[in-house]
Image (tube, rainbow, N blue to C red; front, side, top):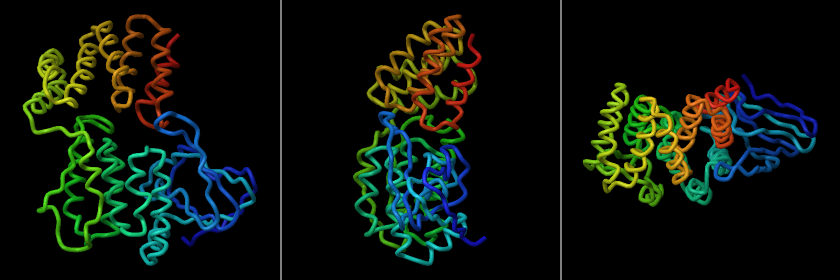
Length: 344
């Protein structure tokens, strides 16, 4: 299907946040604004797209729901590419690859300053490194589905890249984590690069500093105990899991200690000790609000309050989960909304 040229009046909506993404746009003339909330502080942000710039690239390429509203602020002429057409275009034109990756990088600013240090200044020197680091960012932050999509797209563009074997290992890791924990679950990952994962091909030029700055989980006894406890949780052996999680609460691994504190709260809930669940998980969410598990902790608090018949506090906790949700289509957001609506 050939690219479509479309005319939009000023103040027209091109797409809404949450819409299906199967195309990429190029602003030929006029002006477009992308509106979304910052993931760190929920402040509204507006990105201006000018003539000659692509937008909708990230969601279009990895086929995830749109993460922003896009609307015109002037009469605009916009070219819409299907994803296959766009891929065919960029693989034949290096200058377009550079421009596309620059916009791809800019559109990732909503997921925090950390990724910006990776992708804003180096686009013109190493396009493959930029793309690779986007996958690394997603995997590090336990967005397993998105990391898999980005890594697979990388391999489709650059099958002979030196990192091909490494990326295949990354995909396997992400798939295993997704199966075991679901998106945003599980312990933090240590992403190392071994020489045997690299082959000939394009030079490797990504920033190893980002790997060194990550929260790491060593191959310690604490980690082994934690993983065994998670296995017991999956088998619904909650009291056995509780006993194992308590062993690492006073251990030396800071990340494992935090995750164990979260899991203990879930154990309390599953054995119907709802007051203990609330106490445990409120402390956890208050101490570690930036951890991905904080939202889930608040959701368990909401459910525990509901079980105790405290509907006002249950609603307040569910409302906090909704307010902290940046992805309005994820399961936790939907569950919190459903719980809120069902409460009297």
